[in-house]
Image (cartoon, rainbow, N blue to C red; front, side):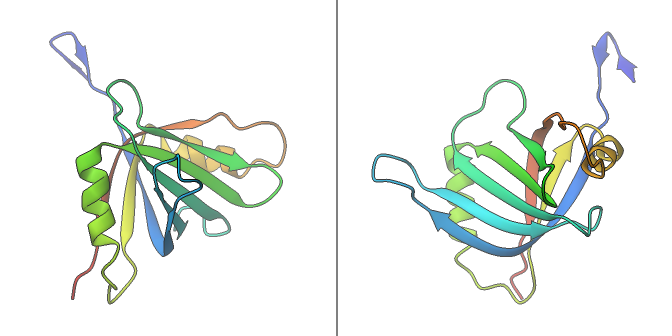
Amino acid sequence: MDDGGIHVSKFDLLQLTILSSEIVKSSLTEDLNISLSCSASELPKHNFSLVLKKQNQDLGPIGYLSCDMKRPLIYAIANLNKEAFLELLEVITISPPRNPSFYLKISDIKHFVNFSKRQSGPMPEIPIYDLGWRFPVM
């Protein structure tokens, strides 16, 4: 859609159900990361590994999805600004009554699903433009 010369892109949401989460600090010189193991209804035969880092991302996508062609694993990495990272860090310490969800905003979910089902050849990285979460509290 064109709105006065500004191109508005269509985005799709990839919903990930969080199965487990960990706070990871690889060394004393690095910031900690949040590592999430997830599943997605769009790709039921794949496992997802989502790593969230505290890093400002001013331009372009906040992260990328990539597919391991040797096994059914989708790897995602995304950068969160300091405020969002600390907010999420506080939320994940609550033990929810059911599994929380993350929503990754990507450009074309059908394209991603088709690439992830391929058995040969490299898959290009799929940009993540935004993310959100739903965390049950009752």
